[in-house]
View 1 (cartoon, rainbow, N blue to C red):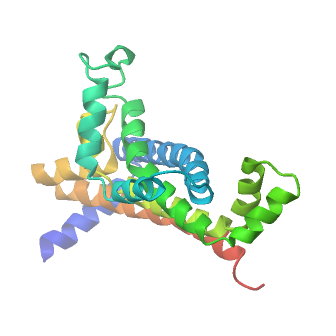
View 2: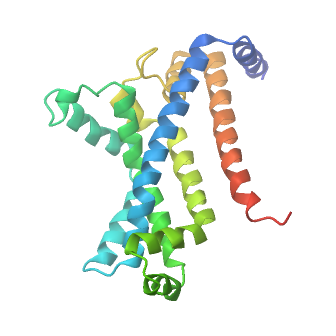
Length: 233
């Protein structure tokens, strides 16, 4: 029990002393996860909304595939991205393997199905007559979708929270694509695993505490925005 207490004491000292390496890792983790989440939102919300309101062959199969993607193992996503970005791969000329850009792509692939599936579910909860009414007023398909999204913006925000929560705690994909290179691609999750395996429990605890704090701060901000529109003043 004493070594646990000592580990937390040393971890807090590392944090409050402003350890440059820890905060550099934290900055990279937050940047990669936020950019990947933003990209997934920009692509997934319109796509999910379009799938929900349109009728086309094999729609149910497509929705099933998207829902399956919600459980995509991060290591599989990382493997696919690595194969494409490897020097002999089709996108090897970009030199994005073992870079933050490559990690953003991997995390985007993980978050995209989550946000798309939740957007489909949210849009399907809108009364179809409301969507048709907007169309009869002269709006285009995308204008009508935009109006409907305003009605379900709180649910969409919940999808954003779910997507970010999945990414900020992800290990496998960023480990494979980023390589956990010091001062370049080392994330809070991958660094925590490495330090734990090396027996540096004080550093691992410090990284874990920073990770939990960042995750809580971002989710708290999103939740406050969401609940501000729900709770009575």
